[in-house]
Image (tube, rainbow, N blue to C red; front, side, top):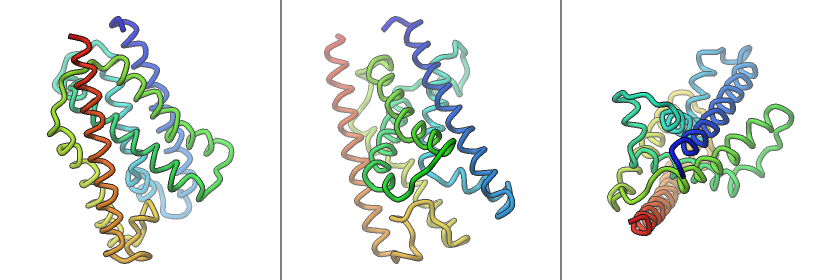
Length: 212
């Protein structure tokens, strides 16, 4: 696609992602205001992989849309970071659809936030990445580097869970499942991330050859 179309598409992705994130934040803070308070509510908000992956999408799309030059902008425009965002948001969508969507029935504004964060944002960003991000720059080792993000999230989840006895997802709930089961679940999710990451790299390399 031509650069103006690419930037316009990225702007749309960024706007939708930021709206969804702010909507979900407002809903969560309103729900937890009289319970744990805004500070711990904010901590809970940033303890969901859904939020972190959508935040990565929002930042990546924003810097793809804005004609600014800075070290931060260059970081988020790097092919490796754009690929990491595609991987994380795609896995977010897949895991939610397969494991989590059936466990609750959101209504009203929460339903809107749920659909945007788990389905619309992933579809828009992955579509932008495929059509507009530019390809042929990823290495097979990038799939291994991308594991650092979910590994960091897992480490934080376990530390926070041991502190507050609260876990964002049932498959990492050490109190309910025990550490052994959570470790097996983590290995399975790690394998999923790695397989999906290699698939993205394979697509990138193939698309890059076609553009040559």
